[in-house]
Image (cartoon, rainbow, N blue to C red; front, side, top):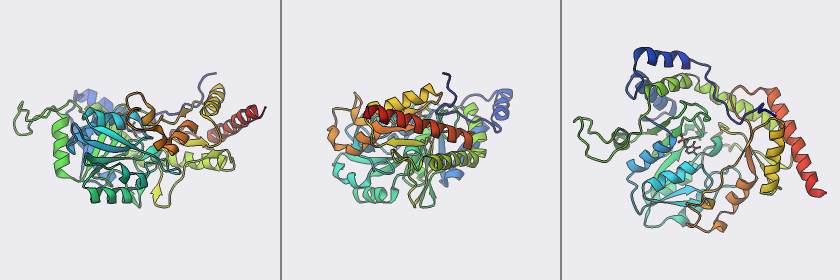
Length: 377
Ligand SMILES: *Cc1c(COP(=O)(O)O)cnc(C)c1O
């Protein structure tokens, strides 16, 4: 059966086309141009930060942020084991070592209580990931960082517009990164953004993303830099997306409400939470089948696929992936081990109607029932 409901679908229903055509007409298609500046300015305003620097994607944004905070060979950076692989890889690009912590059972974000035990004399900082749109518990994380002299980078790739105690993600740590990949809440196709209030971090990032060229001396390179720039065309799409950011975010929240209405009576499913101190933007609406094995979870996904509904499994925890599995013992992460094997992401995109979600939810319940009764037979 064809896919009727994909997991993700970008919505380009604002001024995207006009602005891109404007780039083409003007021939400003490369990484100079007015949209870059406008997009950075708008993004900083949206996140309530002093600086925003556009770059080529969320992964290069992480790499730049770590470099700007001085991460180098031999350093350790604490990250949640339950995250997208880019968080760990960016640490590795700096020849540093990611040190994994387990997740909170309800928000699925890195658990502040487990951080301090992982701090060593080599620890430089912490990356707090706002997974699937729910902010990490930043106050205790910032407190630990302050006491140990560590930096905190927010990986807000999945959480544009989310709030922690009425403050915007992107403005909570020392530096934050966003992804603007096609399946993220707002997109530029491929793209990334870095936000900070720190002038020196902002200057380092601007330097490093443009080959390290001295801003006052052309073709003079005091450091080894990178070409991690965003194009004006990407930024043009970003400007149009940002104009409608509240709509994009509102669509996710509305979808989540409909899913919750339809699924909350189903005792076999754990749904995402929204802590009283949080605004969850529900990048990917998720379900955890807390009584199922990984095989049964996969059967649910296959069953839904047969009904034209695409889903995806939760990320594998970093400590299980071949490049990282020898770093720490798997039994240090009981929460992540469990939820990563039991969780799926459901179709989550702007434009899903209440009827679509009612249909998807009833298919999910039907498949759940089938998979559970198979087990009993
Ligand atoms: C998407 C994502 C990234 C990487 O972003 P890209 O733009 O795909 O490079 C990093 N961290 C998390 C948590 C993500 O979800």
